[in-house]
Length: 535
Ligand code: C2O
Ligand code: CU
Ligand code: CU
Image (cartoon, rainbow, N blue to C red; front, side, top):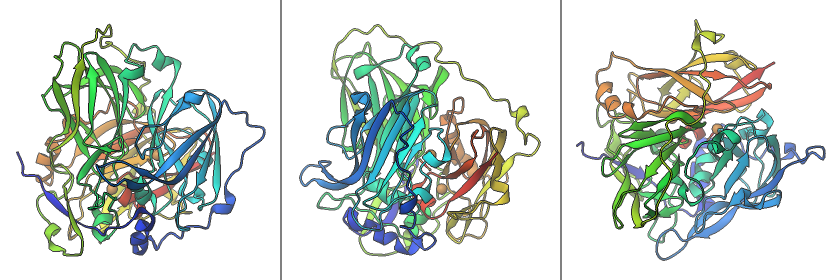
């Protein structure tokens, strides 16, 4: 087994309120605060079935024994409609779980109550297909003391989605401080499947953090973090450290979100039981599939069938992240050990083996559920029907002087290039090409990037690894059986040297959406672009 790579982080200890200041030098391209006046207000003609308020604010959470951790959190309140639409996770900084129903009309008022006038923010509904004006584009960010009102109809398939801040240059800081929540959509089709429900439907958010000696989050963005992404040394499950779950001898549905800023997991069971996958980002698969491990990159979700029937009380099994390679430092060290700065913290590198969660069988209970042979029908898009079938749209990921770029460009709040204009409602092929960067000082063979597109769910048509760099092959072989490409996706892991071909139906309504890397430090540093849907 490869020795885990220890990656050195150069972080300063800060309270969350000042954390963003460390990002200062990297934020030159975006000046927050200029957008507060354009925030939509409620439309009296929109009649919501559900109306909620989500307030980004400060709080404290008991994460480690001893002193509580100062966090930022979404505090939720149901204004009208089903009061069970928001479910608070006890003792967690995570926002409430927001439960929506397909066809439902929702009004959500986001209130920014963050400290520090520079902390503008906006919420993005990751995975939902909503009109551009309701999607939480960075340009819609509002400053502290301001609100933004969302009104939309839920049109998405039943599935596990999530919401998180999306202000340009500040997303990583705000998510690290605690701002994120799960969003679970239900519909008739999903209800028709005989899957575990109620207490047997378990949501798990995996994140990683660094704590100081006083139990406070340590976070800051320096050159190295912006380049590689933040890695924590402590795994948190639903915002809690050293988490374990006591379960019965029954079947469970686990909905798992990788809500980490940059860490990629290779999920497996410690006892080598295969994983049974029910769903990906955009909801249930046609049929369950079995894998010995599953890759889960930042932003991605996976749902698992976890069956404890027949196990003995006291049995334990761990959800682990297995060792893998090839996500960074491909072909060896680079200059990882070379920097010395104050307050160094060590976190395991991407690909180090880690224990995530312990499951313990606590009680014997009979269960009548068995794994369904099929789940829900899933319409297969046909690549030959794409308007650009002969010439897919190409998005190349490169690195130029320690900055990750998309087609050679960084983020520009209000710019759309000619090759970023698409026609409403058309079917397109997009090739995401993770290129090599000969001559670059760090990671010249590239890094793994979780690529995310707003406004759509897509299907993965093909993956190809270039064969002119044999050093890429071993790392790729340590992850590629863990890609679940048979369902709807909104975020896809693209390995170094890999091209992933996506097929997507563009939004029906004109508007401007972003696409970006979901390594949040990468996105904040500019690995994000607009695309424009034209009528
Ligand atoms: Cu979850 Cu634009 O992101
Ligand atoms: Cu998104
Ligand atoms: Cu990236």
